[in-house]
Length: 60
Image (cartoon, rainbow, N blue to C red; front, top):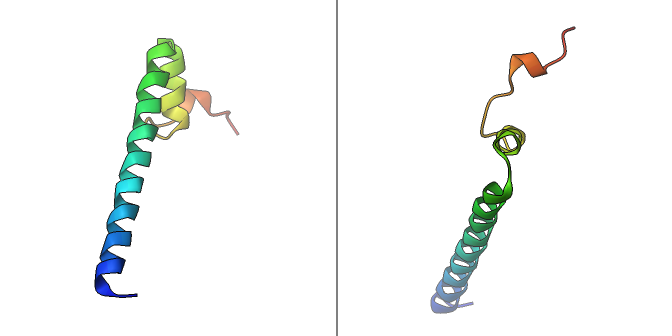
């Protein structure tokens, strides 16, 4: 494979990854728009955006 072909393929991979990321982020925005405040909090917590509250962790 020559340098030009390699560069073309790498650029295309980058473009496709960018499109996938954009689609992924759009889905997150749309999801938050249909959830209640409590659901958004749970969604964020489950996705790792917020720390888990110690009150929700069972005592040992």
